Length: 384
Image 1 (cartoon, rainbow, N blue to C red):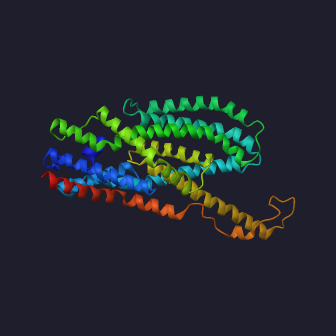
Image 2 (spheres, rainbow, N blue to C red):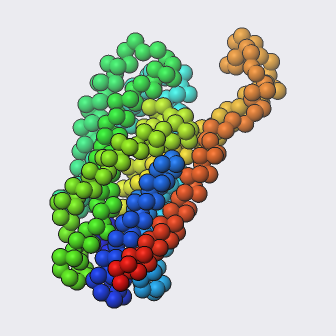
Image 3 (cartoon, rainbow, N blue to C red):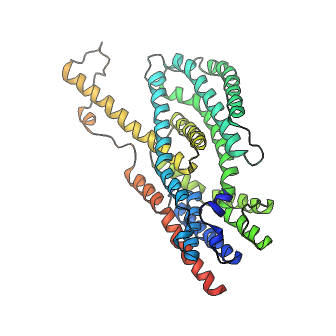
């Protein structure tokens, strides 16, 4: 990502000097930091990577005109705004549909859970092992696709062998209720959240400090280098900033994503987490520049909208049965049904939060670009 920021988004050779290039990166860094902090403060989960990209683009245009931008790279990034959240949403909805169909809606939920939950946990383990290697450890180890696939398959098999007897013991004496079944996803969800956080931290710190690394490299060499190594102290600054941001703004954003978009439980959150890992792996294989933030939030939207669709589908089935059959004690329908509630379409995704987040995604790059352009002009005015 550092090389993309320095060379992929804009053409460094179009800059008048290394000093101007440093100003561009300083403006991009300030603008991205300002925009992400403001967006996080209001509860909009925006992409740090996209803010940095917008900042570099805006400051670069202010410094050397529109020709400095690599519009092919920018087009690919723009396409990812639509592709990645949609992909995350579809995959999360597919997993939730599978769980509901094969476990929740089964007459013997406990037996179904004993059969399918170990497989789902093993899939998660295999996916996250591949995700961790590709995203979290790519700075120190970069194996080929075959090696990653074999390792993921081995971890899948090992996890299945370990988890199956654990789930079988946990299911002993368990009530045949949805609430009881959901508890089986709690420990896998905690593990997946920890792995996802580690991989995001390892990857996103490099993205956030990309402009700073470019500044350090240009200042040290006096030239615009094609490649920049990231000094350890720069990564430490990024890690401290990431931790401080999580401490200050994390709870607000966690509530937005975890509670205010749609209601979550361990089962739904598991689908979101697994979808994020799978989507990033697919996007990496296809070479798409995606945002982990957009994917995770898109997965939450996918879960919420699937719940709306599934609730409406089941309500229609009940309404049809009410019209064609007489309710009696031996029927599969309850004795008392509130018909007015069946006729109301439930909104399980809060539209206000949905629109706010989509709007924030759309304006992130242009707003960061405008801020960076303004900051660059101020720097060049006072420094010149």
